[in-house]
Image (cartoon, rainbow, N blue to C red; front, side):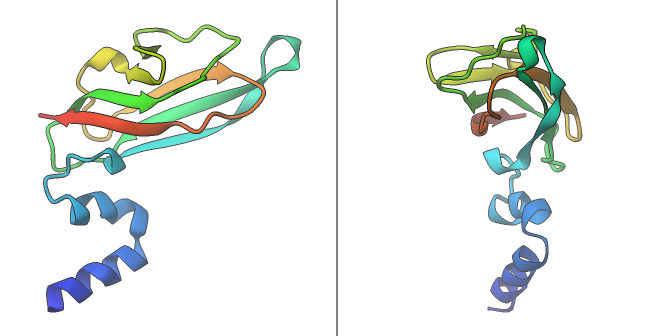
Amino acid sequence: MTKFYFTIILLLICPFTMSCWIIYPGGCNPGCIRIYQWPSGFAGLHIPKFTVQIVNEAWNNKGVYDVQISCPAFASTTLINPAVFRRIDLANCLLYNGRIINPGEVITFEYSNILPYPFIVLDLKCM
């Protein structure tokens, strides 16, 4: 019972950094991959440009791979390097060409669209 209360207190104090370790002790869950994005200027014809940073925060694993991100209706007016982020079917995109992303590694790309796109990690595999 004490362990349960301790877990609840930790989740209330630091819900974002601790949640992937407490809820999934193996550390292999989509919640350990954080996606940050912000406006970063304008592309041609004054279309807003956004920078995306994807961070592997699964510290207790050797790495994750085959990270799939939800991207239905995603479009960009600027070219994104397909080795970094590419569509694999109508609703899913593959990050880093399916290669291993080590703990703490940051993957960055830019896209331009009228509005920011809400990226969500769907699936990943752990080493």
